[in-house]
Length: 153
Image (tube, rainbow, N blue to C red):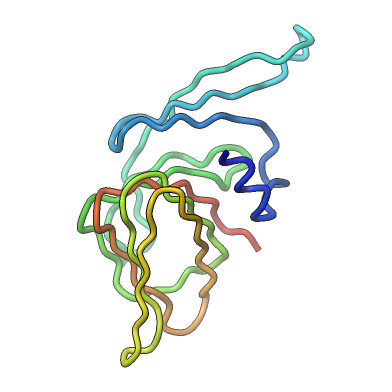
């Protein structure tokens, strides 16, 4: 389902391999099954791997959260935020797509006197594209796991 969602976003060209992503519950390693061609054998095969989470810091003022190293081609990773994680008003320096895997994630936008807030849940797809102005505020209302496609232009 995920490769179809990415194709609809127009970023399928960034994904140069087919994969099936199997996510265990939050806080556990993420199992990934690659479907890879093996040229020496002349056929495709399943290759199992585990994506380990590590602490991440997005910027000096950002609270710590957890994520995986980017997957090839270098722009796809999992991110995990604990319940109560919040990052006050800030900008996204590039176009970032996020797909909600688990939890409830809240984003606020708008001027101080007219803030609009939306909640995103598993299956929701959203993108940050606000490199200037006031930006947005983000908060994990529950422990969250997101699939992150970073820095598209």
